[in-house]
Amino acid sequence: MENTEIAAVLSQVGTLLEIQGANPFRIRAYENASRTVAEHPVPLRALVAEGADLKDLPGIGKDMAGYIKELVETGRLHVLDELTREIPATLLDLMRLPGVGPKKARKLWKELGVETLEQLEAAARVGRVEDLEGFGQKTQAKILEAIANRRQQGVRFRLSEADQIIAPLVAHLRSYAGARHVEVAGSYRRRLETVGDIDILVIADEPDPVIAHFTAYPRVRSVEAAGGTRATVILEAGLQVDLRVLPEESYGAALLYFTGSKAHNVKLRKRSLALGLSISEYGAVRVEEGGAEEPGERRTGPLVAGATEAEMYAAVGLPLIPPELREDRGEIEAAAAGSLPRHLITVADIRGDLQMHSTWSDGKLSIAQMLDACAARGYEYCAMTDHSKTLAMVRGLDAQRLAEQWREMDEVTAGRTGIRLLRSMEIDILRDGSLDLEDEVLERLDLVVVSIHTLLDLPEAQQTRRMVAALRHPHVHVLGHPTGRLINRRNPMAFDLEEVLQCAAEYGVAVELNAQPDRLDLRDTQIARARELGVKVVISTDAHHARELEFMRYGVEQARRAWLEPEHVLNTLPLERFLEAIKKKGAG
DNA sequence: GCCGTTTTCGGCCCGACTGTTTTCAGTCG
Image (cartoon, rainbow, N blue to C red; front, side):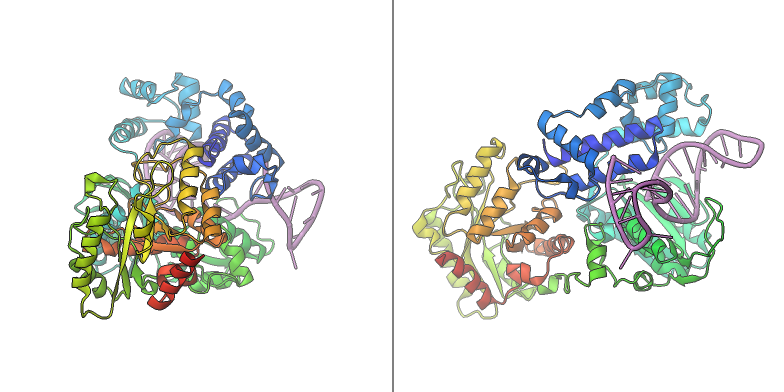
């Protein structure tokens, strides 16, 4: 059983307990445990197999450890089985509709006998839902609309898609004179690989006209909510956007709050309470002694911070934490200990791009055009990595065509200075782990990148053996797009990433962080694991056109989320040191 | 159900909007 599956079961238990009306903190414990499991880079089944103590993981106590063990060993969880005997698991589908939470789902089930989306739709169609206490005409209409929307789409947007949709909206908001700051916060600002919705923060004295300007944006499909300080719309692209308007003195507090993540904020608040402060999106206030607070009432002590994020962090005794790190993956503890990364990697640190294609295989531009584009970006080197012969569909190169390509490369680079064009290739890993090019030709390449493009669905053990065999090859420098996933389209291959990373560490092979926005492979937590194991990373665009060299920023953003600094990334090295680094590997 | 520089019990983050309410529950982020 994979971590994502274990996490899904734990999260299901939490949600069912919510419907049951259980202790909210018990529910949260399941949610926390689920998140820990989902983000853990090592398969928990491996930890269970070696008898490791799962209680060492955050949010995993005696009970959760037992549940995880039960899931790994039996594939079932008795706690879930018991719950689903009482509550139909299909109620979880109802709760994914906006506006339907645990209470409403329970009511629909108990009073109307509704268990599935289909039954809910049927009940709403004949007007049975609006008669329920706490429901009404609008709720019923919203439910029907949400079910219709669900059919159309329900996927998270890739970050690059969100970039394209959001840029004109931000321009629209900035065109309003009364908006002093317009910032996109949320997972978008943390540069998560996909976003479910967008949070935009506007600083203005008069909220009402800003809200009106926002809801009047031409690409708005529907206005879901609009109040005095916030509004929610769905854009024509299907993306939900939440807008919040706040006063200048709360800018930092609001940016912090709406950037999240939720888990990061919760931990910060907890920390602030211990220091006698209470944090909200309006600022940090000192909690008055003995001031018995009414629940739900805003705390009204003296404001001690709020205008900038740095001020907010300083109020709780911390340095500013970069948005990409705000996931509650140890960044608050590291900030407190002064051990945050000193210099998270930036695009400016990148000195070369180590995967791209030309018209020799499936690229769209010539070698000269790609080289010019790399030089224009200020790179010191780039690697031309056309495909090998097994990929006949894209005219993969055999040794003979490769030799011809080298002649063209020599012509292109003759007399040229300032950028080094590396002889390279993206060589297919064959079924048995051997490589799609003869050793004596491999030897003559500057950089050997190996990737899997075929037989993605081999059994896990066989796939792992295949990859390990390829990494042990003495001439291999880089493992390209290691998991083969395509975001929202194709799952990662089944293989033991931990074993592959340990093998890469042992044999001095680097792993690629492929910066294609639909790959971003390895993902953030996996790259972080590579860093922990001392495996070097290369960030490459896999560009098939000069404009795709721009994708480097997505790779770098992902690397930042994995806490990478330039020292962890081979293609931040100056040319000579880069060549030394990969030569050393060849000799070893 | 987890957790511990106010420990093994008693805590566990904060506010806005909607739709349904005659004073607020439910949902969301």
